[in-house]
Structure formats: C-alpha cells, structure tokens
Length: 115
Length: 117
Image (cartoon, rainbow over the protein chains, first blue to last red):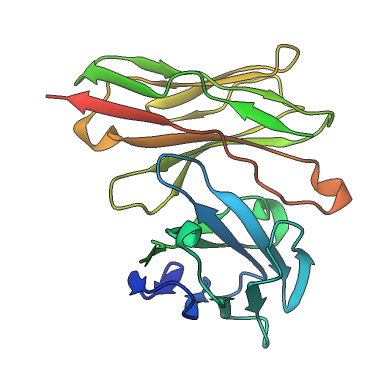
C-alpha cells in the first residue's frame, strides 16, 4: 500500500514569491491534515479536512495561506506571498475511518527555504 | 487549552539498554487517545504506540511499552533492548475526545534519542 505522498521534497524560493505544496493521501483516507514543523519542534496543525470540507482551519494564517481539497482526495497548500519566517517543513498526514480514525499516517514532508 | 511537555530534549543510551522518555500533558478531556510518534532523520513520522485513556492496561508493542498514569497526566514511553534504528525524534501527542469531532493532534516539543553502538 502506498503511503502519503508529498511533493516537492524541497523548495527554495525568494521572499514574496508564491509556493505550493501537494499531498496525495493514502487511498480511502477521508481525513487529511497539513502541519507546519519548525526545526527542533513538534508539528503544528494548520488545517484538517474531512473529505473536501475544511473542518478545522483555525491555525491557518489566512492572509497568506490557502488550501484546497477539491475532490476529497489530494490536496494543495499554498503560500502567497512567502515570508522568511515561513521556512519550515510542511507535513501532510491522513487518517482512515472506523476504529483507527485517530491514527495519522504522515508523508515525508516538503522542506521550504525562503531566502 | 491542551499542552504537552516533554522534559528531556535529548537522550543518549547504548545499544541494548532500556530507555524511558517522559511526557506530561494537560487536558480537560476525560476520554482521549494518547500517541507516541517517531521521526527518524529521514523525517517521515510514524506511529510507535497508542493508548486509550479509559483503558487501565498499559499498551505494549514489541519492545515499546507505555506507563500511563491518567490521574497524574503522565504518559511515558519505554524502549527495551534499544537498537540503532531507534535513533529518532520522539513526539508525545494526546488527543482531544473524538466525540466532539475534534482530531487536533497536539505534539510535544520532542525528545531526540540517540542509540550508540
């Protein structure tokens, strides 16, 4: 079974430029999460989707960050414009339904460097 | 509010030794799940072990076990017969009750564990 796939693995951009990250969750997983992870710290939730609906986006900086999951499968996280402080690893995770709905499966992440 | 404290930023042990990683948390919930996740240097986070708060029996997965003290809000991870592949960041994560539909996972700051040959 394929895991959560994220691309790109690395991205280097200049400040004020836009950037987008893509995530393909495990097949059949209805719940999808985007996290931000700063160096040496734990992940912080940005947004959670149940199918195509964003059910928790309270931590998403909506002035510059946006996300979508149009068909309830893969998802895109966008930053426009990027700032120096956005340099971090962006993790995507997905969860199945049923008894294991609270277990999250993580992708390898996208490491963003803003210069 | 829900906070998670991992008081050991770094730990280092010899291969085959036993090591315990501590975690305390603060939650107003009564029913919840607790997780330990491992993040090796490749950065892919994987689940190590899961504990349900209403179960008194501590969870065990092969060499990994937990010591769950609900009243003390403590959830430590014990790794027995440690192996080089156990080298990673370990994150403790309690979870709010899913009854309210919340699946926000609040991670601790992590403990960097190094297993030395």
